[in-house]
Amino acid sequence: MLVLALALLPVHAAATASAIAGGEPREQVQNHTPQPQQDGLQQPGQPAPQAAKKQIAIVIDDFGNDMLGTQEMMDLPIPFTAAVMPFLPTTKRDAEWAHRTGREVILHLPMEPMKGKKSWLGPKAITADLSDEEIRKRVMEALDDVPHVIGINNHMGSKITANERIMRIVLGICKERGLFFLDSRTTPKTVIPKISAELGVKTAGNDLFFDDQYTRSHISKQTRLLAKLIEKNDATIAIGHVGPPGRHTSAALKEAAPQLSQTADFVFVSKLVR
Image (cartoon, rainbow, N blue to C red; front, side, top):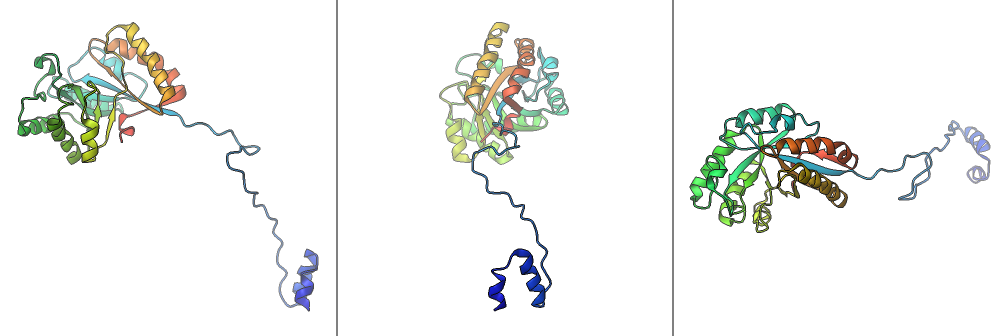
């Protein structure tokens, strides 16, 4: 039979036989489908796969009071998150300035520490002796006082961030307003991870302070420590300040940025909250 014969014919003969049988000969198409690649092996002519870059978020605290280093920080050639204190002479100016230069803005909320004077905190700080109603009122007013806010972090606050009653109120407001909370980690007794998990609020935690001591030598040492943290971790958050250490910190960051950017991408802290 013709059908059986076709199976035995060469390709060109099969096409001819098809025409004889009353059909049009089919155009022969060269098969260019690549062979399946073996997983994990580099194919000839392909560039070697690059490892994903690490991420680093820099947060600069204490904007809002025309502090030393403000101009130098704003001139840095890297993205950072500006933490702005409320109710101070340049609160709105600094928040607008940061926003205009492409930075993100968070509220640097003054909170009572375990040690130190309440007078260090500035106006309308969150202290442990306040009622629930007053805490809520102060947090809402502070958020409304700082333009372009997308999150909160604590200014000082070792006493407050260990207080479940107060942090439940603060994090509840974050949930209501779609904000994240950055724990500056001024105490190992922080309750923020526990309560944020209960409430479903996105948070992150600080990994390093650049300038807990104000000397240039210490700040430079901290930038070297930051490089080591980046080697170990996929994402790292580091906090610096305007004020007494501001010019030293900005200079150290400017100097370290080119080397750090070889292994890590500078991102906003909002990219690292979970």
